[in-house]
Length: 566
Image (tube, rainbow, N blue to C red; front, side, top):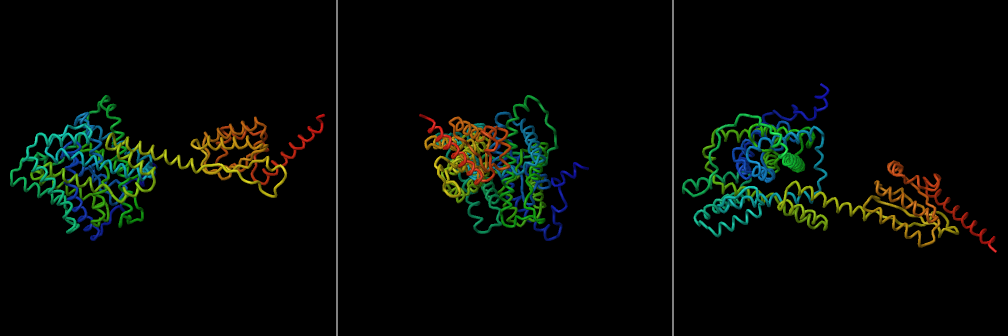
């Protein structure tokens, strides 16, 4: 009972649905629209990932329903996505189709645990340039993956997509079967034209489905030499548990973590974007629940894996269609999956005759639409650091690995952020408060400000040391009241600064240690190296008075010594 209470916000609720007739009609219509849009994408992503069209359909149905019921958004539509296909393809190529169920279940379990651990806000730590660069990189990979199918060539899985695309084009040119090449390019262009032109006539037209249907009809009537999807099952497979081989599990552990990270990030980004769209507010006033979304996506991948599907994530394109189609509750996402389920049971024959080139056209247009030109232009113009972070993330995504791209992008972004913070941190010499007194020239008041951390500590301490040594200073007052951050490195450097000045017979006074920094300074030993415990002050006036009295005393001692000297 206590556990259920603690996890109540992660469980489905009655308020997830509005069962009024108007809301139900709106949800069913939106679900039909999204289902029509999602069908060709599910087929295409299943094929491009190397697991087959059937796995794409299963994922759209099973994961679509589970994520809709348990997820953290009323509008999120889940299923196979381009990014997941990109990550999954090399895993399947390296370990075979037998690895699909195991890696899907493992990744789903990881995502579920992330949700139970309340890590749903993790996406807020990903900088905007990294997100835009990642999106551009994924779009490029999806587009390049379709080049072999678009020119009628068979691609070897597991290789770099750019290299494979270039080899396919070269092979098509060198060993050109002009008839087949014309048909494949024609199918791609027909679908692309439909997706680009039809929405201008009416936004409700399912352009991708119309394009695929038209290409299939023409290919069938003309008996075109085009590769087809092939036979599909006429129903959902029975759920089965895969055999868990410890050796295989160890080999797939890295892939499972990478897939889980991608599933979590993509799903959270999707609901974050959806929440900002028009009419995306929730009926109960809650925009979205990120922890519950991770739980829902984890359960969706677990269910998909049991039925032979692939890992699932939230799909921003289908989610946007859902919102714009007037969806009110999760019933729309559930009904979209039921539409695809009906296709599995009633129309696998016609679907099996769809040319692969037609699906390539769908994904090529989808890849192009993934890139927001205004956003890319804006991130490139913000500053050099944002532009470089964006570019590095995109290049690494295409050239190496998606998860590595996010990691490297975060490192680059963190480097530039720390550099900016370090530059903002500084030390400034100020005049002593009150009326000027004789001997004030022997007192140096330094105000440290900003974040004093490892990136700025050496520069700040060196400045104080050098200036104090050159100007005949007898007392240094370090004013710390405006310091925003002190890390262990800076605290250690500050202790070394005090020790250095004291060895040079320069008295150090410290003023304004904040309560939040006192623990770090005390633990490192910064305050203990002061010559006397009374050299720590709360007010600047008290520190200045003590410094002036010290200078007067030193001056008096020096004068008396000079008088005694014969």
